[in-house]
Length: 117
Image 1 (cartoon, helix red, strand yellow):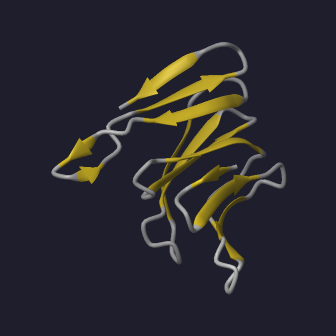
Image 2 (cartoon, rainbow, N blue to C red; image 1 turned 180 degrees about the horizontal axis):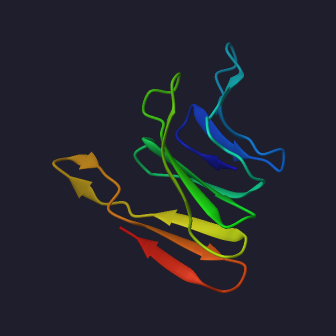
């Protein structure tokens, strides 16, 4: 699990779900991110709070646009590694005063590391 910002938490689970949790005490609830189809081994959120990623035990990586918290959208899903993903890190670059994803790095159980542009 990881914090997206002060109000939102991102979790992944072996039940093949990725969720955004609203931590507002008056409205504690979760939103299911669409398209997850494997046990989740790692999650990450971009510093801007706009992007969420999940790595799975089958080596797949999924990236969502979560800017609209009520309607998160799956952007891409692909096989990033041949084994379980163990870590995901986003770049924290800025462009025109806004945080943007320039690249992300994934690591897997087999020791491989990949940079994705």
